[in-house]
Amino acid sequence: MKNLLFAALAVVLLAACGNEPKSVTTTDADGETMTNYGEEVKSMDAMSVEQLVKYMDGKQEQNVTLSGKILETCPKKGCWMDIANADGPAMKVRFKDYGFFVPTDGAEGKTAIMEGRAFRDTMSVDMLRHYAEDAGKSAEEIAKITEPEEVIAFEATGVIIKS
Image (cartoon, rainbow, N blue to C red):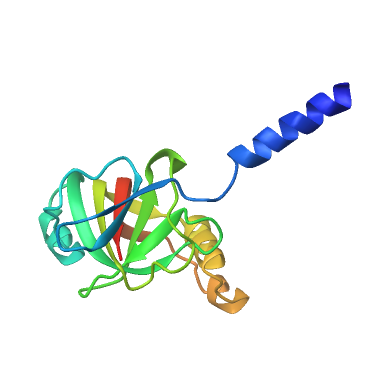
């Protein structure tokens, strides 16, 4: 009986820990498919990464809606994504409280609209190496990461990916 109880509990826990992103898919007036991950994104009035960088001048933190092209998502779990920045390095987007994930593949090149918090951050060497490892970088590339980076980071409460 005890083994049956443990087996049932294990099945429930495994089902709850699935990597399938929780999402809601809709179609806009133009027939474009949009999938929302995390909290509902309420505003489609978004600024680009380049505009955000200028907007953050002299600011430590701001709640904004951001739009950009997805370069890459975490191939292991979908727990981060990189958004293109024509004026500099890609912006790393993480998800509030690790509360939702985006697809691990197939999102590259698509447009994302994100609501959340932009903030100035220092990414540690360990965190930079972790992201590089997640992205499948070689041991040589990871070993070259020896200094922390000052960045404008983004923590999304919700993300729409347009198809």
